[in-house]
Amino acid sequence: MNERVLIIVGIIAQYFLSEQNFSNEHEIVEELLGAGFKEDEINEAFVWMESITLHPETNHKIPQLVAPKMRLFSAEEQKGLSVAARGFLFQLRLSGIITPEVEEEIIIKACHDNEDQNNLAEIKSLTVLTLFANLNYDHSREIDCIIENKMDKLYH
Image (tube, rainbow, N blue to C red):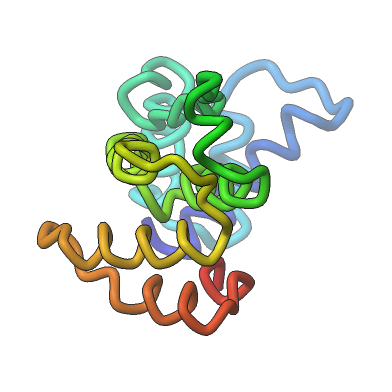
């Protein structure tokens, strides 16, 4: 759709939004022709507006927003992960850097056969190793940001 057709659509919209009464679309067409627009441009504008209003579901699919899923940590996991470590994993998952599956893998590795609580540094190391082992995606940027403790750069 070219710029002139968009201008026509804007003019037609102004007609509908204004308090001017018009008997039919021929009145609008005559005014548009008088303003120097071509008949095929006017027809294209009406066809586009008709397709938008009569078939909105096929023309503009609005993505559904999905609320992030909260993960509850078991008593064993809370014992094995510090609050900072759990917050770090939550932040990574919420921002889309790791998937819930990768988060689960990190938690299992951290809590398996470990008597002591894992602190933030240990979870960062484990996260880097897990991301490095995941060959489906190049996580080098994320790994660099985690190692350098520059979490704000992960979002930009």
